[in-house]
Length: 546
Ligand code: ADP
Image (cartoon, rainbow, N blue to C red; front, side, top):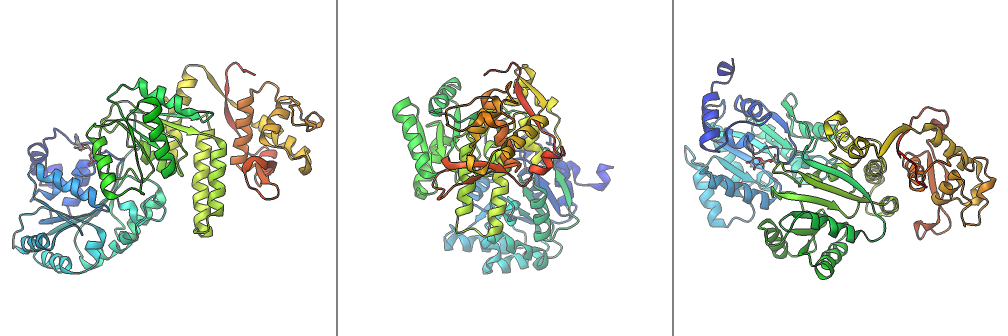
Protein backbone atom coordinates (compact mmCIF):
# COMPACT_ATOMS: atom_id res chain seq x y z
CA UNK A 1 0.00 0.00 0.00
CA UNK A 2 2.86 2.30 0.97
CA UNK A 3 4.43 1.62 -2.43
CA UNK A 4 1.44 2.87 -4.37
CA UNK A 5 0.60 5.81 -2.18
CA UNK A 6 4.22 6.82 -1.95
CA UNK A 7 5.91 5.61 -5.13
CA UNK A 8 9.18 7.22 -3.99
CA UNK A 9 9.62 4.90 -1.02
CA UNK A 10 12.56 3.01 -2.54
CA UNK A 11 14.39 6.21 -3.41
CA UNK A 12 13.80 7.65 0.06
CA UNK A 13 15.07 4.56 1.85
CA UNK A 14 18.06 4.26 -0.43
CA UNK A 15 19.09 7.87 0.09
CA UNK A 16 18.62 7.62 3.84
CA UNK A 17 21.34 4.99 3.87
CA UNK A 18 23.67 6.30 1.18
CA UNK A 19 23.46 10.07 1.63
CA UNK A 20 22.79 10.32 5.35
CA UNK A 21 24.36 7.03 6.43
CA UNK A 22 21.44 6.27 8.74
CA UNK A 23 20.00 2.77 9.14
CA UNK A 24 16.37 3.70 9.80
CA UNK A 25 13.89 6.43 10.60
CA UNK A 26 12.96 7.82 13.92
CA UNK A 27 9.36 8.33 14.87
CA UNK A 28 7.41 10.57 12.46
CA UNK A 29 10.32 11.21 10.13
CA UNK A 30 9.02 8.93 7.40
CA UNK A 31 5.49 10.30 7.69
CA UNK A 32 6.72 13.88 7.44
CA UNK A 33 8.86 13.06 4.41
CA UNK A 34 6.06 11.24 2.61
CA UNK A 35 3.55 13.99 3.24
CA UNK A 36 5.75 16.82 2.00
CA UNK A 37 6.77 14.78 -1.04
CA UNK A 38 3.10 14.21 -1.74
CA UNK A 39 2.74 17.98 -1.89
CA UNK A 40 0.97 18.42 1.44
CA UNK A 41 1.67 21.02 4.10
CA UNK A 42 3.14 19.51 7.23
CA UNK A 43 3.48 20.68 10.79
CA UNK A 44 6.20 18.79 12.66
CA UNK A 45 6.50 19.03 16.39
CA UNK A 46 9.53 17.24 17.80
CA UNK A 47 11.64 17.93 20.83
CA UNK A 48 15.07 19.40 20.30
CA UNK A 49 17.39 16.71 19.04
CA UNK A 50 14.47 14.67 17.73
CA UNK A 51 15.67 14.82 14.13
CA UNK A 52 13.62 17.52 12.45
CA UNK A 53 16.30 18.42 9.88
CA UNK A 54 16.15 15.07 8.15
CA UNK A 55 12.43 15.59 7.41
CA UNK A 56 13.29 18.24 4.83
CA UNK A 57 16.91 17.40 3.96
CA UNK A 58 16.04 13.95 2.70
CA UNK A 59 13.12 15.06 0.49
CA UNK A 60 15.39 17.80 -0.82
CA UNK A 61 17.70 15.23 -2.42
CA UNK A 62 14.95 13.03 -3.83
CA UNK A 63 13.52 13.45 -7.32
CA UNK A 64 10.39 11.32 -7.04
CA UNK A 65 8.08 13.70 -5.19
CA UNK A 66 5.06 15.61 -6.52
CA UNK A 67 7.10 18.81 -6.43
CA UNK A 68 10.77 18.95 -7.19
CA UNK A 69 13.67 21.34 -7.44
CA UNK A 70 15.09 23.58 -4.73
CA UNK A 71 14.02 23.45 -1.07
CA UNK A 72 14.04 26.85 0.67
CA UNK A 73 14.60 26.75 4.41
CA UNK A 74 13.82 29.78 6.55
CA UNK A 75 15.87 29.89 9.70
CA UNK A 76 16.15 32.71 12.25
CA UNK A 77 19.87 32.74 12.99
CA UNK A 78 22.84 33.11 10.71
CA UNK A 79 24.88 30.84 12.97
CA UNK A 80 22.27 28.09 12.62
CA UNK A 81 22.19 28.56 8.87
CA UNK A 82 25.95 28.33 8.58
CA UNK A 83 26.09 25.18 10.71
CA UNK A 84 23.35 23.48 8.71
CA UNK A 85 24.69 24.32 5.28
CA UNK A 86 28.19 23.21 6.30
CA UNK A 87 26.67 19.95 7.51
CA UNK A 88 24.98 19.39 4.15
CA UNK A 89 28.10 20.25 2.22
CA UNK A 90 29.96 17.64 4.23
CA UNK A 91 27.34 15.08 3.22
CA UNK A 92 27.88 16.05 -0.40
CA UNK A 93 24.53 17.83 -0.68
CA UNK A 94 24.80 21.15 -2.54
CA UNK A 95 23.48 23.93 -0.30
CA UNK A 96 23.61 27.71 -0.22
CA UNK A 97 23.51 29.87 2.90
CA UNK A 98 21.81 32.98 1.60
CA UNK A 99 22.22 35.53 4.39
CA UNK A 100 23.13 39.14 4.90
CA UNK A 101 26.71 37.97 5.48
CA UNK A 102 27.09 37.03 1.81
CA UNK A 103 29.37 39.23 -0.30
CA UNK A 104 27.91 40.74 -3.45
CA UNK A 105 30.09 38.41 -5.47
CA UNK A 106 28.76 35.32 -3.69
CA UNK A 107 25.24 36.63 -4.05
CA UNK A 108 25.69 36.97 -7.79
CA UNK A 109 27.05 33.45 -7.98
CA UNK A 110 24.03 32.16 -6.09
CA UNK A 111 21.66 34.03 -8.40
CA UNK A 112 23.37 32.62 -11.49
CA UNK A 113 23.23 29.12 -10.13
CA UNK A 114 19.55 29.28 -9.24
CA UNK A 115 18.69 30.80 -12.62
CA UNK A 116 20.02 27.74 -14.44
CA UNK A 117 17.33 25.56 -15.99
CA UNK A 118 18.23 22.65 -13.71
CA UNK A 119 19.87 24.06 -10.58
CA UNK A 120 22.45 21.86 -8.98
CA UNK A 121 21.64 23.31 -5.54
CA UNK A 122 19.21 21.28 -3.42
CA UNK A 123 18.77 23.45 -0.35
CA UNK A 124 18.87 27.22 0.12
CA UNK A 125 18.91 28.54 3.67
CA UNK A 126 17.59 32.05 4.12
CA UNK A 127 16.82 34.39 6.97
CA UNK A 128 13.20 35.57 6.99
CA UNK A 129 14.09 39.15 6.18
CA UNK A 130 16.02 38.02 3.11
CA UNK A 131 13.01 36.15 1.85
CA UNK A 132 10.38 38.83 2.42
CA UNK A 133 12.46 41.95 1.82
CA UNK A 134 12.10 41.73 -1.92
CA UNK A 135 15.06 42.28 -4.18
CA UNK A 136 16.68 39.75 -6.38
CA UNK A 137 15.75 36.63 -4.44
CA UNK A 138 12.06 37.26 -5.12
CA UNK A 139 12.46 37.25 -8.87
CA UNK A 140 14.50 34.08 -8.59
CA UNK A 141 11.78 32.42 -6.54
CA UNK A 142 9.19 33.47 -9.11
CA UNK A 143 11.26 32.08 -11.90
CA UNK A 144 11.80 28.81 -10.04
CA UNK A 145 8.06 28.60 -9.45
CA UNK A 146 7.29 29.13 -13.13
CA UNK A 147 9.83 26.52 -14.12
CA UNK A 148 8.39 24.10 -11.52
CA UNK A 149 11.68 23.94 -9.70
CA UNK A 150 10.53 25.32 -6.33
CA UNK A 151 10.12 22.15 -4.26
CA UNK A 152 8.97 23.47 -0.90
CA UNK A 153 9.33 26.05 1.83
CA UNK A 154 10.52 24.91 5.23
CA UNK A 155 10.00 27.16 8.22
CA UNK A 156 12.48 26.10 10.86
CA UNK A 157 11.94 27.26 14.46
CA UNK A 158 8.40 28.08 13.36
CA UNK A 159 7.38 29.13 16.89
CA UNK A 160 9.08 32.45 16.12
CA UNK A 161 5.81 33.55 14.47
CA UNK A 162 3.96 33.34 17.78
CA UNK A 163 3.83 35.94 20.51
CA UNK A 164 3.13 33.07 22.88
CA UNK A 165 6.43 31.45 22.10
CA UNK A 166 9.64 32.28 23.87
CA UNK A 167 11.30 33.67 20.80
CA UNK A 168 8.93 35.88 18.87
CA UNK A 169 10.41 37.52 15.76
CA UNK A 170 8.47 40.16 13.87
CA UNK A 171 10.12 39.10 10.59
CA UNK A 172 8.48 35.71 10.88
CA UNK A 173 5.00 37.25 10.70
CA UNK A 174 5.59 38.19 7.08
CA UNK A 175 6.10 34.54 6.14
CA UNK A 176 2.31 34.42 5.82
CA UNK A 177 2.90 35.94 2.38
CA UNK A 178 4.55 32.76 1.10
CA UNK A 179 1.32 30.87 0.59
CA UNK A 180 -0.20 33.71 -1.46
CA UNK A 181 2.91 34.62 -3.42
CA UNK A 182 3.90 31.06 -4.29
CA UNK A 183 0.67 29.10 -4.56
CA UNK A 184 0.95 25.36 -4.80
CA UNK A 185 4.34 25.19 -3.10
CA UNK A 186 4.08 22.95 -0.03
CA UNK A 187 5.10 24.39 3.31
CA UNK A 188 6.67 22.55 6.23
CA UNK A 189 6.66 24.11 9.69
CA UNK A 190 9.13 22.69 12.19
CA UNK A 191 9.25 23.48 15.88
CA UNK A 192 10.09 22.12 19.29
CA UNK A 193 7.56 24.36 21.01
CA UNK A 194 4.49 22.41 21.92
CA UNK A 195 1.96 24.75 23.45
CA UNK A 196 -1.40 24.53 21.71
CA UNK A 197 -1.59 28.28 21.46
CA UNK A 198 1.72 28.38 19.62
CA UNK A 199 0.71 25.59 17.26
CA UNK A 200 -2.51 27.41 16.38
CA UNK A 201 -0.60 30.64 15.77
CA UNK A 202 1.86 28.92 13.47
CA UNK A 203 -0.78 27.20 11.36
CA UNK A 204 -2.88 30.34 11.09
CA UNK A 205 -0.02 32.74 10.37
CA UNK A 206 1.46 30.55 7.68
CA UNK A 207 -1.96 29.89 6.19
CA UNK A 208 -1.52 26.10 6.28
CA UNK A 209 -4.86 25.12 7.79
CA UNK A 210 -5.60 21.49 7.02
CA UNK A 211 -1.93 20.50 7.07
CA UNK A 212 -0.78 17.11 8.32
CA UNK A 213 0.13 17.47 11.98
CA UNK A 214 2.83 15.21 13.38
CA UNK A 215 3.27 15.59 17.11
CA UNK A 216 5.79 13.70 19.13
CA UNK A 217 6.13 13.02 22.82
CA UNK A 218 8.27 15.54 24.57
CA UNK A 219 9.48 13.20 27.21
CA UNK A 220 13.25 13.10 27.49
CA UNK A 221 13.77 9.82 29.33
CA UNK A 222 17.50 10.30 29.87
CA UNK A 223 17.14 13.61 31.71
CA UNK A 224 16.93 13.56 35.50
CA UNK A 225 14.98 16.51 36.91
CA UNK A 226 15.57 17.90 40.35
CA UNK A 227 14.58 21.00 42.30
CA UNK A 228 16.89 21.94 45.14
CA UNK A 229 16.31 24.51 47.85
CA UNK A 230 18.37 27.64 47.37
CA UNK A 231 19.60 28.31 50.82
CA UNK A 232 22.91 29.76 51.89
CA UNK A 233 25.93 29.27 49.70
CA UNK A 234 24.83 26.92 47.00
CA UNK A 235 28.10 27.36 45.17
CA UNK A 236 29.76 24.71 47.34
CA UNK A 237 26.95 22.34 46.51
CA UNK A 238 27.32 23.11 42.80
CA UNK A 239 31.07 22.56 42.94
CA UNK A 240 30.59 19.25 44.75
CA UNK A 241 28.07 18.18 42.13
CA UNK A 242 30.35 19.12 39.24
CA UNK A 243 33.20 17.15 40.80
CA UNK A 244 31.02 14.02 40.83
CA UNK A 245 30.60 14.40 37.07
CA UNK A 246 34.21 13.84 36.06
CA UNK A 247 36.59 16.29 34.43
CA UNK A 248 35.31 15.71 30.90
CA UNK A 249 31.66 16.45 31.65
CA UNK A 250 30.30 19.53 29.89
CA UNK A 251 27.62 21.62 31.48
CA UNK A 252 25.70 24.87 31.40
CA UNK A 253 24.88 27.00 34.43
CA UNK A 254 22.11 29.49 33.74
CA UNK A 255 22.04 32.80 35.61
CA UNK A 256 19.60 35.68 35.40
CA UNK A 257 21.97 38.57 34.72
CA UNK A 258 25.23 39.40 33.04
CA UNK A 259 26.85 40.34 36.35
CA UNK A 260 25.79 37.11 37.97
CA UNK A 261 27.26 35.11 35.08
CA UNK A 262 30.58 36.89 35.27
CA UNK A 263 30.81 36.68 39.05
CA UNK A 264 29.88 33.02 39.27
CA UNK A 265 32.28 32.01 36.49
CA UNK A 266 35.05 33.97 38.19
CA UNK A 267 34.35 32.41 41.55
CA UNK A 268 34.38 28.91 40.06
CA UNK A 269 37.73 29.65 38.45
CA UNK A 270 39.42 31.56 41.26
CA UNK A 271 38.18 29.77 44.35
CA UNK A 272 37.39 26.31 43.09
CA UNK A 273 39.85 25.71 40.31
CA UNK A 274 37.13 24.91 37.79
CA UNK A 275 37.61 26.17 34.25
CA UNK A 276 34.36 28.07 33.77
CA UNK A 277 33.61 30.96 31.42
CA UNK A 278 30.70 33.33 31.11
CA UNK A 279 28.54 34.04 28.07
CA UNK A 280 25.92 36.75 27.66
CA UNK A 281 24.46 39.20 25.15
CA UNK A 282 26.62 42.05 26.46
CA UNK A 283 29.76 40.50 24.99
CA UNK A 284 31.09 41.21 21.52
CA UNK A 285 30.16 38.82 18.74
CA UNK A 286 33.75 37.66 18.51
CA UNK A 287 34.06 36.96 22.22
CA UNK A 288 30.82 35.05 22.23
CA UNK A 289 31.90 32.93 19.31
CA UNK A 290 35.24 32.22 20.95
CA UNK A 291 33.57 31.06 24.16
CA UNK A 292 30.97 28.97 22.40
CA UNK A 293 33.54 27.26 20.21
CA UNK A 294 35.96 26.66 23.06
CA UNK A 295 33.19 25.00 25.00
CA UNK A 296 31.94 22.96 22.07
CA UNK A 297 35.47 21.75 21.34
CA UNK A 298 36.07 20.69 24.96
CA UNK A 299 38.75 23.32 25.56
CA UNK A 300 36.83 23.99 28.77
CA UNK A 301 33.72 22.34 30.17
CA UNK A 302 31.58 24.79 32.08
CA UNK A 303 29.74 27.72 30.62
CA UNK A 304 27.91 30.20 32.86
CA UNK A 305 25.33 31.94 30.73
CA UNK A 306 22.18 33.96 30.48
CA UNK A 307 19.43 32.57 28.30
CA UNK A 308 21.08 34.43 25.41
CA UNK A 309 23.03 31.20 25.19
CA UNK A 310 20.98 28.46 23.69
CA UNK A 311 19.25 28.37 20.39
CA UNK A 312 21.36 26.79 17.71
CA UNK A 313 23.75 25.12 20.05
CA UNK A 314 24.16 21.57 18.95
CA UNK A 315 26.43 19.87 21.45
CA UNK A 316 25.45 16.25 21.97
CA UNK A 317 27.29 15.54 25.22
CA UNK A 318 26.06 18.18 27.67
CA UNK A 319 25.91 16.25 30.95
CA UNK A 320 24.22 18.83 33.16
CA UNK A 321 22.19 22.01 33.08
CA UNK A 322 22.01 23.90 36.35
CA UNK A 323 19.62 26.79 36.91
CA UNK A 324 21.29 29.03 39.45
CA UNK A 325 18.31 31.37 39.07
CA UNK A 326 14.68 30.68 38.31
CA UNK A 327 13.59 30.41 34.69
CA UNK A 328 10.80 32.77 33.62
CA UNK A 329 8.53 30.06 32.25
CA UNK A 330 8.22 26.29 32.31
CA UNK A 331 8.52 26.30 28.58
CA UNK A 332 11.82 28.13 28.76
CA UNK A 333 12.89 25.67 31.42
CA UNK A 334 12.09 22.75 29.17
CA UNK A 335 14.05 24.28 26.29
CA UNK A 336 17.03 25.14 28.47
CA UNK A 337 17.22 21.74 30.13
CA UNK A 338 16.62 20.20 26.73
CA UNK A 339 20.17 21.12 25.79
CA UNK A 340 21.40 18.37 28.08
CA UNK A 341 21.78 14.79 26.94
CA UNK A 342 21.08 15.08 23.24
CA UNK A 343 23.23 11.98 22.79
CA UNK A 344 20.70 10.02 24.84
CA UNK A 345 23.02 9.41 27.79
CA UNK A 346 21.89 10.12 31.36
CA UNK A 347 22.16 13.82 32.21
CA UNK A 348 21.13 16.00 35.12
CA UNK A 349 18.94 19.07 35.31
CA UNK A 350 19.09 20.87 38.64
CA UNK A 351 16.98 23.88 39.45
CA UNK A 352 17.77 26.01 42.51
CA UNK A 353 14.68 27.54 43.96
CA UNK A 354 13.89 30.04 46.67
CA UNK A 355 10.34 31.27 47.09
CA UNK A 356 11.55 34.81 47.64
CA UNK A 357 13.34 34.86 44.26
CA UNK A 358 10.06 34.07 42.58
CA UNK A 359 8.30 36.88 44.40
CA UNK A 360 11.06 39.26 43.43
CA UNK A 361 10.61 38.42 39.77
CA UNK A 362 6.83 38.86 40.03
CA UNK A 363 7.29 42.32 41.49
CA UNK A 364 9.88 43.21 38.86
CA UNK A 365 7.40 42.29 36.16
CA UNK A 366 4.79 44.48 37.87
CA UNK A 367 7.12 47.43 38.00
CA UNK A 368 8.48 47.09 34.48
CA UNK A 369 7.38 50.22 32.63
CA UNK A 370 8.24 48.80 29.23
CA UNK A 371 5.52 46.16 29.48
CA UNK A 372 1.87 46.55 28.58
CA UNK A 373 -0.74 45.28 31.02
CA UNK A 374 -1.34 42.29 28.82
CA UNK A 375 2.31 41.36 28.67
CA UNK A 376 2.59 41.70 32.44
CA UNK A 377 -0.30 39.34 32.98
CA UNK A 378 1.18 36.81 30.59
CA UNK A 379 4.61 36.95 32.13
CA UNK A 380 3.24 36.70 35.64
CA UNK A 381 1.12 33.72 34.68
CA UNK A 382 4.20 31.98 33.26
CA UNK A 383 6.17 32.77 36.37
CA UNK A 384 3.39 31.42 38.55
CA UNK A 385 3.60 28.14 36.71
CA UNK A 386 7.30 27.96 37.45
CA UNK A 387 6.65 28.60 41.15
CA UNK A 388 3.91 26.01 41.26
CA UNK A 389 6.31 23.51 39.71
CA UNK A 390 9.07 24.30 42.19
CA UNK A 391 6.81 24.20 45.20
CA UNK A 392 5.10 21.00 44.21
CA UNK A 393 6.95 18.05 45.62
CA UNK A 394 4.02 15.67 45.38
CA UNK A 395 3.88 15.12 41.63
CA UNK A 396 6.37 13.65 39.23
CA UNK A 397 8.41 16.48 37.67
CA UNK A 398 8.24 14.86 34.29
CA UNK A 399 4.44 14.67 34.36
CA UNK A 400 4.32 18.28 35.53
CA UNK A 401 6.50 19.51 32.68
CA UNK A 402 4.74 17.36 30.08
CA UNK A 403 1.30 18.38 31.35
CA UNK A 404 2.30 21.90 30.48
CA UNK A 405 2.68 20.68 26.90
CA UNK A 406 -0.73 18.99 27.10
CA UNK A 407 0.85 15.59 27.28
CA UNK A 408 -0.34 13.00 29.76
CA UNK A 409 2.51 11.11 31.30
CA UNK A 410 2.16 8.21 33.72
CA UNK A 411 4.70 8.69 36.55
CA UNK A 412 5.24 4.93 36.56
CA UNK A 413 7.30 5.52 33.45
CA UNK A 414 9.52 8.07 35.13
CA UNK A 415 11.61 5.29 36.67
CA UNK A 416 12.96 7.43 39.50
CA UNK A 417 13.95 9.99 36.91
CA UNK A 418 13.15 12.98 39.10
CA UNK A 419 13.50 13.99 42.73
CA UNK A 420 9.85 13.41 43.59
CA UNK A 421 9.61 9.94 42.05
CA UNK A 422 12.93 8.99 43.59
CA UNK A 423 11.72 10.16 47.00
CA UNK A 424 8.43 8.34 46.70
CA UNK A 425 9.96 5.13 45.39
CA UNK A 426 12.46 5.11 48.24
CA UNK A 427 9.66 5.77 50.76
CA UNK A 428 11.19 9.06 51.83
CA UNK A 429 8.06 10.94 50.89
CA UNK A 430 4.42 10.15 51.30
CA UNK A 431 1.83 11.89 49.25
CA UNK A 432 -1.28 12.74 51.16
CA UNK A 433 -4.37 14.84 50.94
CA UNK A 434 -3.65 17.98 52.94
CA UNK A 435 -6.82 19.87 52.02
CA UNK A 436 -7.89 20.00 55.68
CA UNK A 437 -4.57 21.48 56.76
CA UNK A 438 -4.82 23.99 53.95
CA UNK A 439 -8.26 25.06 55.14
CA UNK A 440 -6.94 25.37 58.70
CA UNK A 441 -4.12 27.65 57.55
CA UNK A 442 -6.55 29.87 55.67
CA UNK A 443 -8.89 30.07 58.67
CA UNK A 444 -5.94 30.82 60.88
CA UNK A 445 -4.89 33.73 58.68
CA UNK A 446 -8.50 34.90 58.61
CA UNK A 447 -8.57 34.91 62.43
CA UNK A 448 -5.68 37.37 62.66
CA UNK A 449 -6.23 41.08 62.32
CA UNK A 450 -4.60 42.90 59.48
CA UNK A 451 -2.72 44.96 62.06
CA UNK A 452 -1.13 41.79 63.40
CA UNK A 453 1.11 41.76 60.34
CA UNK A 454 1.72 38.08 60.08
CA UNK A 455 4.53 36.93 57.82
CA UNK A 456 4.74 33.48 56.23
CA UNK A 457 7.23 32.55 58.92
CA UNK A 458 4.95 33.71 61.72
CA UNK A 459 2.09 31.79 60.17
CA UNK A 460 4.17 28.62 59.99
CA UNK A 461 5.14 28.99 63.65
CA UNK A 462 1.57 29.60 64.75
CA UNK A 463 0.31 26.67 62.68
CA UNK A 464 2.87 24.37 64.30
CA UNK A 465 2.19 25.73 67.78
CA UNK A 466 5.38 27.70 68.33
CA UNK A 467 5.17 31.10 69.95
CA UNK A 468 8.38 32.15 68.19
CA UNK A 469 10.25 35.27 69.15
CA UNK A 470 8.50 37.81 66.97
CA UNK A 471 6.69 39.27 70.00
CA UNK A 472 3.39 38.63 68.25
CA UNK A 473 0.62 36.93 70.21
CA UNK A 474 0.51 33.88 68.01
CA UNK A 475 -0.86 31.63 70.74
CA UNK A 476 -4.04 33.70 70.97
CA UNK A 477 -5.10 32.53 67.54
CA UNK A 478 -7.75 29.77 67.82
CA UNK A 479 -5.87 27.71 65.27
CA UNK A 480 -2.59 27.87 67.17
CA UNK A 481 -0.91 24.45 66.94
CA UNK A 482 -3.43 22.72 64.66
CA UNK A 483 -0.50 21.60 62.52
CA UNK A 484 1.75 20.47 65.31
CA UNK A 485 2.90 17.37 63.44
CA UNK A 486 4.19 19.44 60.53
CA UNK A 487 7.91 19.95 59.98
CA UNK A 488 8.88 23.56 59.70
CA UNK A 489 10.03 23.63 56.08
CA UNK A 490 6.96 21.72 55.01
CA UNK A 491 4.61 24.05 56.83
CA UNK A 492 6.31 26.97 55.13
CA UNK A 493 5.99 25.30 51.78
CA UNK A 494 2.29 24.62 52.36
CA UNK A 495 1.72 28.31 53.05
CA UNK A 496 3.78 29.34 50.04
CA UNK A 497 1.74 27.02 47.88
CA UNK A 498 -1.43 28.69 49.15
CA UNK A 499 0.06 32.05 48.15
CA UNK A 500 0.96 30.78 44.69
CA UNK A 501 -2.57 29.39 44.31
CA UNK A 502 -4.07 32.71 45.34
CA UNK A 503 -5.81 31.34 48.45
CA UNK A 504 -3.60 33.66 50.48
CA UNK A 505 -1.79 36.74 49.33
CA UNK A 506 0.93 38.97 50.62
CA UNK A 507 0.63 42.71 51.01
CA UNK A 508 3.43 45.15 51.53
CA UNK A 509 3.26 47.86 54.09
CA UNK A 510 4.23 51.49 53.38
CA UNK A 511 6.94 51.86 50.73
CA UNK A 512 7.54 48.29 49.83
CA UNK A 513 11.27 48.64 49.44
CA UNK A 514 12.02 45.01 50.08
CA UNK A 515 9.95 41.89 50.36
CA UNK A 516 10.91 41.65 54.00
CA UNK A 517 7.75 43.46 55.01
CA UNK A 518 5.26 41.31 53.19
CA UNK A 519 2.35 40.14 55.32
CA UNK A 520 -0.40 37.61 54.78
CA UNK A 521 -4.09 38.11 54.16
CA UNK A 522 -6.78 36.14 52.37
CA UNK A 523 -6.48 35.93 48.60
CA UNK A 524 -9.11 35.87 45.89
CA UNK A 525 -9.19 32.06 45.80
CA UNK A 526 -9.62 31.61 49.56
CA UNK A 527 -13.33 30.91 49.24
CA UNK A 528 -12.88 27.93 46.91
CA UNK A 529 -10.63 26.33 49.50
CA UNK A 530 -12.85 27.18 52.46
CA UNK A 531 -15.83 25.68 50.64
CA UNK A 532 -13.90 22.47 50.31
CA UNK A 533 -13.94 22.79 46.52
CA UNK A 534 -10.20 22.53 46.08
CA UNK A 535 -8.19 19.52 46.92
CA UNK A 536 -4.55 19.82 47.80
CA UNK A 537 -2.08 17.02 47.62
CA UNK A 538 1.28 17.47 49.21
CA UNK A 539 4.22 15.36 49.99
CA UNK A 540 5.16 14.97 53.62
CA UNK A 541 8.31 13.45 54.91
CA UNK A 542 7.40 9.94 56.01
CA UNK A 543 8.62 10.42 59.56
CA UNK A 544 8.04 14.05 60.43
CA UNK A 545 11.10 15.81 61.70
CA UNK A 546 10.78 18.95 63.70
P1 ADP B 1 16.38 18.83 15.76
O1 ADP B 1 16.52 19.75 14.57
O2 ADP B 1 15.05 18.18 15.85
O3 ADP B 1 16.81 19.45 17.05
P2 ADP B 1 18.43 17.39 14.40
O4 ADP B 1 17.76 17.35 13.10
O5 ADP B 1 19.53 18.37 14.57
O6 ADP B 1 17.37 17.61 15.55
O7 ADP B 1 18.92 15.93 14.75
C1 ADP B 1 19.53 15.65 15.98
C2 ADP B 1 20.49 14.51 15.83
O8 ADP B 1 19.81 13.30 15.56
C3 ADP B 1 21.48 14.70 14.71
O9 ADP B 1 22.76 14.36 15.20
C4 ADP B 1 21.03 13.74 13.64
O10 ADP B 1 22.08 13.26 12.84
C5 ADP B 1 20.41 12.62 14.45
N1 ADP B 1 19.39 11.88 13.69
C6 ADP B 1 18.36 12.40 12.98
N2 ADP B 1 17.61 11.42 12.44
C7 ADP B 1 18.17 10.25 12.80
C8 ADP B 1 17.86 8.85 12.54
N3 ADP B 1 16.81 8.49 11.79
N4 ADP B 1 18.67 7.92 13.08
C9 ADP B 1 19.73 8.29 13.83
N5 ADP B 1 20.07 9.55 14.10
C10 ADP B 1 19.31 10.53 13.60
